Length: 407
Image (cartoon, rainbow, N blue to C red):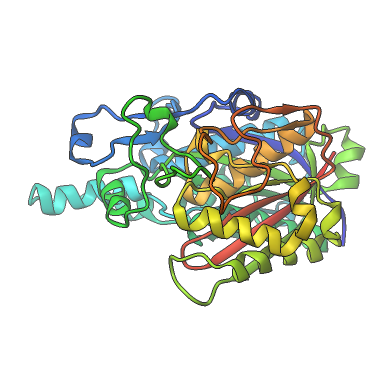
């Protein structure tokens, strides 16, 4: 198995539209969550979300064939490729692949189509609705943009989609099947239909009446749920020796990936399933539990997940769990569903690069069931991290944990 370097990263997120901007706002604890003000949001019980200010360039025919989730993915991939200092130069097209995760695909386009069909009783559906809505559209457009002729794969495993995509890309680069992979995720779930559906599940946070930006409170006793967000994050993966020989800046190393299935309940998280994914990541990377220096938690802010995740970390790491700084960045960028794992992977690499443990914001009340070191409310500087885990635990029971190494 070859060492796999991350030589490029791209981000469009509620915290900013580059890895550096997103990291600095996460480090400062600045929230991208806000109250929605569009007229249609009056129908929401809790009209809050985390949005990005990305606006696609121009009004090209191609842009009109792309749902927002595809536009975000294409822009993030271009940013990552540009940062890689020539990762695709001279590449055999068949040796480059695309791996994208998304939970809901082109839900904005599908919601618009349903409004036309059922709300307006019109039969004039947009001619590209299928192309706009299909889950693999983002990966397809990225492959077209960069001429990549190898595997072009889309993973839809709810909240773990992009972590799974990155893990699967890592396996193919590490095994020698590919020389370059673009991997990550994208999500644009902020349609009325989508937000109402999530509200119906009773997993969405109650808006804080005084400070809506503080509505998501992972691991806090007074947490009330998650806040949905939009955005995309993409990584360039390639063999370590190849990146080094080219003189590329290496952001970090992918050490391994662990997957598990709850096989018990479609929405309720379980300690055994989460612990299995954590152990699988350690085994994949050849690590002992005490070699892990920090964790980026799934940390959704729901009652069920946060206490379960705490118990799973304790089950795997024992007494070492109490020495681990644990960050839950969804408090400030929201839950990007299928793109969450990729964004948190990027933030983890940036945190290792800058020797910072990112804060878990809005953690004002300690929950006795969540009794680990969650780096509450302020970044911790000077934290030298060599190995970090980034966890993504999904509805459906598909769990994924990435093992990350400092550059």
